[in-house]
Length: 328
Image (cartoon, rainbow, N blue to C red; front, side, top):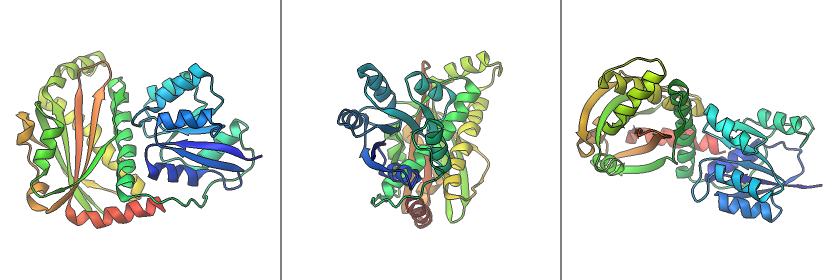
């Protein structure tokens, strides 16, 4: 009997990856939804005996879907597939009724093992299904950034004992001289401090900017004290946060491309400054810059920071190559 399976993710790239990871010999009909509202309707329409659910989506996120499925007692078995791999995220989705939690990108072997564990599909087969789905390069970039963003959030959450909220990353292609304006708009009205760190590897080079709002320092100091990390100066706090976020995020991108980035030394390029004054070496050199902007906030604390990954124009061809390989 053919089983209706639903893959709910706002990223077409992620939907394709997930579909390809399902066992080849599993008799299923795959349906797709791009947000929680579409997903709930699909469950009501009988198109989701098994549901693979993302957490970070517009309109209605995965947590809301889980709550509504439980509230309405809808008939579906839910496996969460997310780039948000914080321990508390796992605990929350299990408490809301998810069967299991899989880290993005989903491994065919892991999928097969979970399906077998819960008696959904008991044959020894892993995925590499043929999936006829066109994915835009921008969709690919966003999902690549989303997975990397989750890895940085996981480390930050573990080290600080908090829950990190990470909205959908923003991807843009900017012309020379536009980066300062774009960053200023992302942090409008805020006084910020900024750390810069260069990176290079396999035809890709760029600059990572860690941007911390001035209003965040007080709460970060409180958390550090509660975690037994002791007091530190604003500069130490800024550099420590940069080490927790820039490296893991770049490693998250490099691991998806199966490459390695060499990182330069972090440099503080400004403290307690207006966001409109942030400058970038890349912005002065390149005609085009690909930007991945990732915003982070800490739940129940007045802490917000962001990462802006700026890729040189010369890197775009290599980035397109690696992203296309992932989407095949």
